[in-house]
Image 1: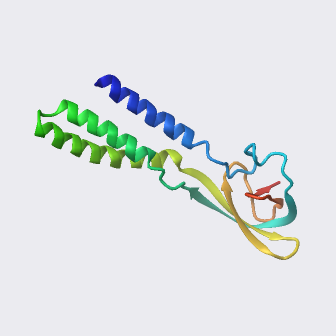
Image 2: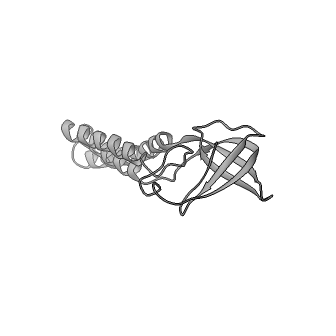
Image 3: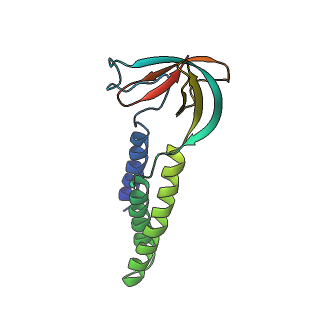
Length: 153
């Protein structure tokens, strides 16, 4: 039973690690689908920069894995018969809540909301990973592709 619990925990960690591989919202990281794609480039000046948190929505991986691990751990270690079933259900509920919280913390990352006044006069806002620093007054390029927009130097 401990082997099964260890396997489930390993699966949770691997699932969350793979979930972190979603399409980047970075100025410097591109997915294979974004490589070798034409992008429209506009020039502009940074007007505002605001730190934000990029929080992907829950996938359910954390909750399901936590519930399975909690149910197995509690059900196999507490009581016998109906007591074991009740412990398993309680462990699953608590494990699911804990797994959801862990997934939320693991997938959260720092981002920037960058307000750019394009040379055309249009004001746009782009939110992306905080992998480059931008300051008001910086001259920047805005790259717009089929599925992404990013601000770069």
